[in-house]
Every structure is written in C-alpha cells, then in structure tokens.
Length: 226
Image (cartoon, rainbow, N blue to C red; front, side, top):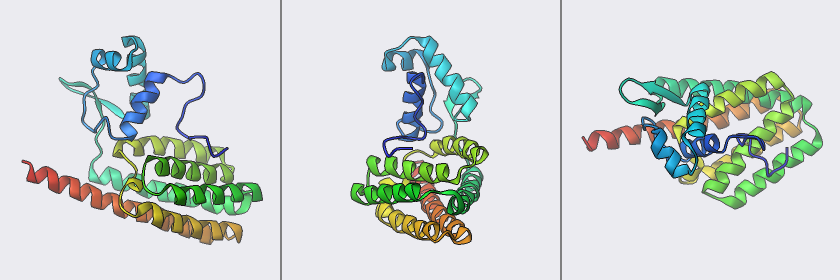
C-alpha cells in the first residue's frame, strides 16, 4: 500500500454515487436518521435514479442504511451500547493486527508507518489528518498479513462511518494520536507482539473515551434544545 491509498476508496469500477454517499456519511454531511430520497439525491449528484438506488442498496448491505416504516431508506443510527461494542471489537481486531505485524511486518512496512506518522504530525487537525490516520491503520493491517482479519476490519470500518467525522478533527487529538502511534511502532520495531497489542488497544481505548465524551455532549445539547 502506498501513502496515497485510502482503504475505503473503491477501485476504478467503483460506483461514484455509492462513494459520494459513503463520503457524506463519513464527513457528517449525511447525519444518522436522515432520509435518503432518490429524486433529491439523483438531482444533487447529477445522476439518474438507477445508480442512486443501487448505491442505497449497497449502503444497506454495508449496514449503514436501514428502512424505517413510513420514511424509507434512512442513515442508520447507533445507540450507546452499539458504539461501545464497535470500539470493543476495534480494540480486539487492531490489537491483534499489531501483534501479528510485530512478527510479519517487513522493515519497509515499518518505515512506511513512520513516514505516515510524520505526515500525520505535520497535518495537524483536519480532514487531511483524518485521511492519513486511516491510511496508517490500513497499512498496519496490511503488515499483519492476515486476509481474514483484513476482511473483518473492513466491515467494522464501514460501521464506524455512521459515527461521522473523525475525532482527529477535534482539539489536540491528532497530537496525542501521533504519540500513541509512536509507542505502537516502538513495540513493532522491537518485534514485541504483546507490547504492540497492548499499545494499540490503549490507542483505540483513548479514541473510545473521546467518542463517549462527544456522544454525551451531543445528547446534552439535544436535551437543551427540547
């Protein structure tokens, strides 16, 4: 994988309407609970209703869209328990990936992780930082060299998109993520699988704590507005 690759980008034959809607869910343009109206989307995306319908079906297959009675296709919402379960699984899968990568990663792959983390540090806070962070985690997953783990992680990553914008868009999270990545990489370079898994789990749990605070703030704001 090169540093230009994005793990959730489709190949050349990818559906452009699907990718556009996927991006809008990821960046929060399409919010959980929002209806997906075919006519409105086809006009906005500049395509016929057929690719929009196909894109919605694919998003349903991904678990990102559900059908709500009397509303139709709607961006799925996650309750608090589901969010916790997603992060628990992410800690398990990415922790395992780090442990396997400590054994299987080549020196070139470890160097690539270092380059990506340096780029993340330079990017600071924003969408570019979020993009580089996704590539960092995908590169580490590739370095684990386990196809079944990769497939499971891709499914989980799509479910995480429902949560909206990355935590790296807020405060000093990007800076702390860079430091956490460095601790993971130190364990990888030492070929210490147990330490790599421990540090990766700590990294994911730090992101989970920030997500919990964001959800609590969102719920508090919603209560105040009602």
